[in-house]
Image (cartoon, rainbow, N blue to C red; front, side, top):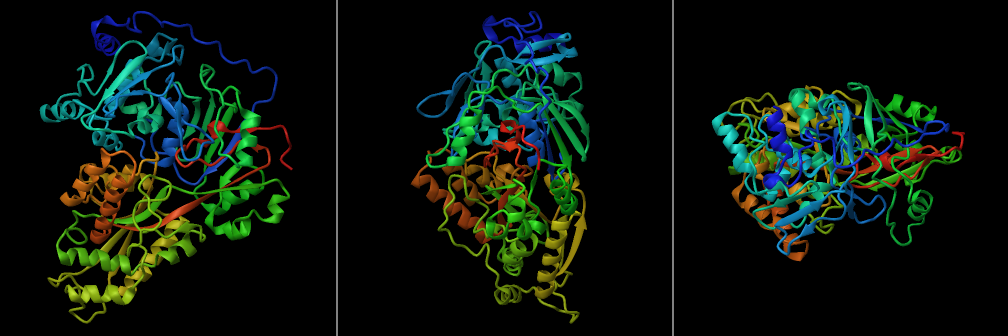
Length: 609
């Protein structure tokens, strides 16, 4: 194992000495002095559970947010710039990029350290270029089973897909020590990425710790199966406590000294400019501790926030009209200093149809007719009003606002509610009641029963009721299967669910993130419906290599219209995210792609009331 480690940390031609031979080429920074000031603690409530704290295995927004605090990506987002803008994180500058957008060179800042660990001999260890090379390779390792591999495979990193297939075909461990052109260390602080085709938006992938967070190979190899339970990175925080599905505690990483607050607020945004004036130049993180409680039910989460047990919370749909009538914070809450923060999220909630399922899948006209009829019979606006507190936009496709390729002028039947048309479609293609029991059968006379998978919580329960009512009006039996989200995502990746009500939230501003939801090569990852349509795949592949602009937008719109025609997804909402903060929370500016928003927050000395 030690030889394997040396090979991993020692690039070709002996460009730099292995970390195992020398503790580091730089001296670890002294931990930040805390003085006698009271600790700054942020207490927040989240509505969903975490799943896994391994960047390569995180698949939900909560886990991705936590990963963002524990690990460092080379790039990050400016906290105040709108539209989103990249800035260096562990990188000394934005990457060098060739004219064709096929070669990227990242140069790291020296003197960034992993905290001490037994795998390092009980000492800190410097972050080096080889750590990013190893970490990206992990997404290709079949044993890791990363749900985010599609980001890299779509870009076409040279040699890595072949290395993955070699491991699969030979049934051998993934060869991390094999050098490939797709990603390799140039020296101690520089690594390069080469891709097979133009990838003008690839740098966005390296701005997410869930996609490009640096792990130390020595730490992973102590026990690869449990790395998601023992995160050890260079991020702003370290994990200090964890009760699964209930509570997590993040504490300031005393060795994280390479991030200071800076931002570029839009002209005319007085609130963002005030935040910059107050926080600019301060050492990050501003908080000493973040205490995160998972409270899935809305009422206890809401009451605990009102009672001062939490400093900020997602505004529950059930209390939206009470807390924020007409989109403004209620006067009684405003008098307490409570503030409302809202943004249209780059997120799409949907119910998907498994395109490989014998009942709802397939590409023949009668199979397409069934999905389109089911979609037409479901009232999207009722879901928005009754299950989402009227705080959402009805979608026209799976593509949400806020990402490249979104066209607000696009109009499709995605959000249409037309029960007569739905019934007529089913009648036309032979989905009729053959035995007089009031329920439709399949064209061959077999029972027609849909299975909708969901979770046992209040909002999901309302949506289940809406689907049940819609199918009853259409004359189709519907059975609801409940399980924890973690169980549903596993089954979804395996392709065993018929229908599942879930969603997809953008991790970056590139609309290709939602094209991947429709791409055959992303089955089992972003493509939960498992649609594999050659004409659709061809459009998606063509738009990937183009720069942002009218030509690319036209291809994306064509792909979206084609997807609506086949209806693998019934998109039901683009949510308006709403957060409430108490008066002492400073610096919160909702960001569409930065999920660990607490990294930029501060607590002032003002009392709660």
